[in-house]
Image (cartoon, rainbow over all chains, first blue to last red):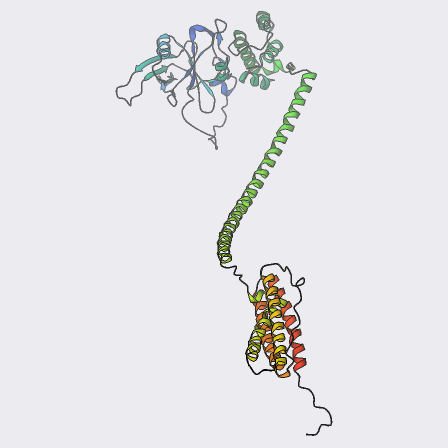
Length: 182
Length: 322
């Protein structure tokens, strides 16, 4: 597999805002028969980090959960893991939902032990996929009602997965606005 | 071709049937046999999370990878996307509507521009109206001030009228003829006093007394006539000097000595009158008063010239022996 990588250039005036947009998509693995995949055979440089394909629901009409996180609470990082010549990545992150609505708690319990796929959107609009078949994303939800009056109460979701790539971008963009409008 | 497939894969939403064209054109026979009928079940554009759409994306993704790996195998194949645009009639309607929108936008811009002009003009006029209103207020203040003064003057006038019919007469305002009558009465009065004293002498011859009495009566008549003239003028019965009765020409005494004295006094009086009238002309602002004064001056000058002519010393007769 001899692939010549492109010249890696600097930003050259491009924007580089950190953080993520506050909209996420959650696809429970049990509800979808197919998900975007990192290509098994690399044909172009972008194939290293671009998942091709789309989610296919098992039951017609099944849609992902659109999760509106509290602003500036979405975090994603992918530290390296493993020994030399056996390294991979352990993507991890969190997002927060302030408030104590019943739906938040229900979501937390329902997916507490359900692996799936998480889609984040960075500030450039590129969509990031966490989870691949066999290397699924798991959610952990923690509730904190606060103590002092000024404390914030809500549920913090942390997610983690194992991955071959530090970040996996979706090759086919998912129109979240259309999802909300459907 | 790969570019077209990638473009479709990046954003397939709303382009299901284009994806179907890619699938039908490029998929292998086995795959087509398995899936094509399923994909063609749809006749309308599906939503992005429809099962058909997801599977089609996956199949096209696989095709894209195959094309990337082996582009030569797909070299001669051309993708022809079905144009699913509007028909000719609908397109015509769309174009007409677009044109209408453009025209309306232009009209809106024009109206906006006119509106801003009108607003600016309106502001200018408002300022002018404000100024005029301010002027009007000032003028109204002046009018009310003058009205107050007028009321005061009318009140004063009524008070004065109530006092024995006194008339306020300015000598300067008298027309020339009335002034003449006024001045003549001033001259007559001492003459009448003189005649009175002469009549009182007991030894006077009755013929002389008769003559003096007649003279006194004539003077009295003249004085009464003059006073009537002055009264009529002061009461406004005589509208204009042009319509006023011309005063009688002054008559001087038959006695050359008395006549000479009368004339000399008259000359002095006329000179004084001319001087007074000239002062009026120089100082007054009212045109009518000025005109009247000028007329008087003319009359006085004419009379003065006549008198000066009469008062010239007679030239000595030729051949007179001293």
